[in-house]
Length: 401
Picture (cartoon, rainbow, N blue to C red):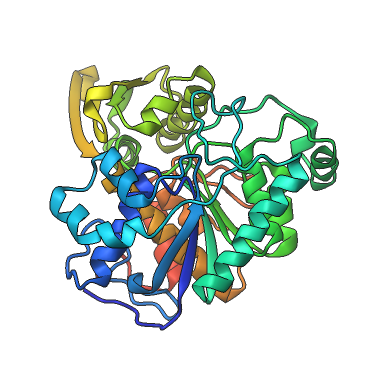
């Protein structure tokens, strides 16, 4: 195990602080701070690069529509075991989310009493920016990063207001309904000089107007939709099939999950946003269109955070012979996602220290729909994404060196 020990203190402002992923991340950092010597699941734990903040020097704040303290939230989500809740309960109970900016039209079925009732878009942005300023002051952090871990929003329709910064500014002034909460948070972060990472499928800093804003302000941004389970496996397997010239005739992927994220996906608009980010990976890697590529996600309450993903892959080999591959991944959604959110925050903070603003393509490894800076097709193959990140970090090739 290697920790950088920079002495730099990083504050992570989380949108959706009371969710399963965020509470798992906060508890994980508390366990590490108390002396845990196992850092499984943290891909950059053994990468020693100047400026990369130590896990023990991370502090948290953030927003949630549910105002429950994080100990109560963790008990509700049931990701942590009893021993972990007992060990971290005191620290978690001391953290309560700030009132959040929400929208029933963008995220139907997700609401709460801990809501900031802003009088329009500009007022909402000011409230978020004020929270960031207070967080920086109270945490005494050297750097602040915003990470979006909120529930998935529906994708807005095509709207000219999102295509340029000038049009977006005018749309903010008239409280245009095409602008949702995720975009307001992203705008507030960029305006405040705070790096922003979008771990959700929601349209946020990837809107052309906000990419332009981030480049103009030289603020690092990255996203979108964290690549944790089934899609991660897809980006590992598909390059291998291509390298062996095994033709993919069809790929059927289905998921069941019962956490709050899954409940939000019961809304058709939110589900469409999620399916879009999961469905664009395969053709890019293989170099041809897989006509029978099916992706299905179902909310199944009894599973809670214990997600199950099935993949059936039909391939053709030498002399046209047909074969099948079956993959059954039983995983804990938040246990996979939380460490990736932490690593994204650490790298965004490092990018800001290096003066690298705009889209951070080196973080593609962690996303289903990686943002790109200049309009080229994103890289989806896992091994190529890993090389991109390690080259940017200036670290030895391959994780856990």
